[in-house]
Length: 339
Image (cartoon, rainbow, N blue to C red; front, top):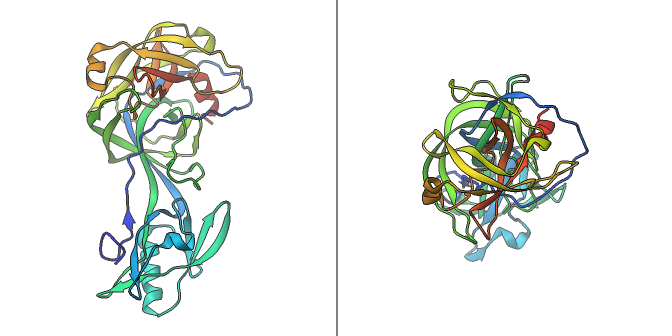
């Protein structure tokens, strides 16, 4: 048995908090205003590894001696791609291949992808009552929750998050770009405090509405098969020059699947000739929302920002030192990436 269940490697599902603190430059591209379908819904995201990811290690006993795979160089972020030459793409396949090799009394060699190259490592394991433990925690998908920004009916594509989805604990992992998006249900809110951003605690649903083909510093993009709601609002997007300081609002889900309006004041704008994050600085002024969240919380990423009847951008970051303040990405840069 691998720790955590019979014949099961421990699979820790991640409900990733969606706040990132990076910026990235793209080449200049003139973006024209479009009519899109407004988002604001909570979404669940599953991105697929090309193998099975190691997320950590634990102690096992071999020949009455304590052993931890970390001593042999196994570490979080390593991707297991093969067992004795046979490719593995899921935990169940990894588990069955290891079990099969143990049954044959074969030595087990794992092919690991790390630091952009493949290497082979011997897998040691503990046997007890016909069950085996490897000392490895693993997962087969990167999972997270966030907010849908818009649907683009012209291309049947969508944009969400406004930043990359990545597990920052796994240093060897590059951004994943294949996966699926689902409905999501917000169960409760953990409020923010300065130095400690809060989050939406949400479940990922079972209704798949689209696929992912791009996950980069400016958001998550893909094709949609259906809309999360048939009650849709069409809206024109604003160019960067149309955005002004002053009153605006964004749409997000704070309970269940109900999209609600959050009043903000845009306090600062950074004019950008090329794509960058944090172009829009805003402050939440909605007293009802502040009573619940105390500021910007993780999971609001992707919430569409509306001003003067146009979609101007998406919420992307929280100011950790002043959680009532947040940052947004101009919608221009999301449209540029939506292809």
